[in-house]
Amino acid sequence: MQLNDIQPAEGAKHYKRRVGRGIGSGLGKTAGRGHKGQKSRAGGYHKVGFEGGQMPLQRRLPKRGFKSHLLKFNAEITLAGLQRLGAAEVDLLSLKQAGLVGELIKVVKIIKSGELKMAVKLTGIGATAGAKAAIEAAGGSLA
Image (cartoon, rainbow, N blue to C red; front, side, top):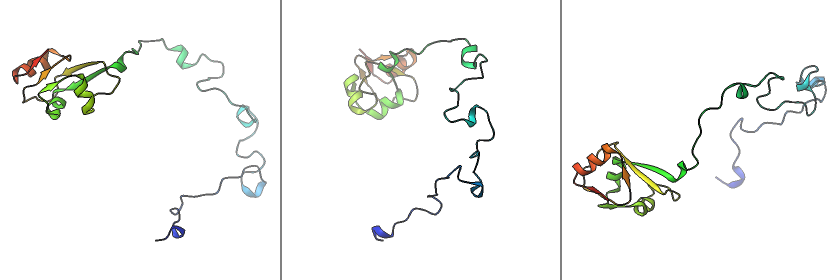
């Protein structure tokens, strides 16, 4: 195979449709826009969500809840994730170096999902009640 032999797959390339170029093209005169109306005019359209003057759906429904901007600094690690890590002592820095949490993370919490069969010493990391019991049952500790 040579560079000059390479061709795009069959049907991958097609000509741009030229509209408004006579009746023989099938898209002459109104150019596929139909007759009259806002959508047929140049530059004539409405913003997303506009309902012709009727109160739009996103304004009829009540506002509800919020998403905290601080969530980007929190992370969760499962017991299975700790098991895969395979380290005897775990802190925030070791989790970041292993790629289990992102670089922005400041608060990490262990949740009870999966199993932990080895003793792990956690430093500066929180845990749910169930995860704490599982860690201590495996011979580990939280500090």
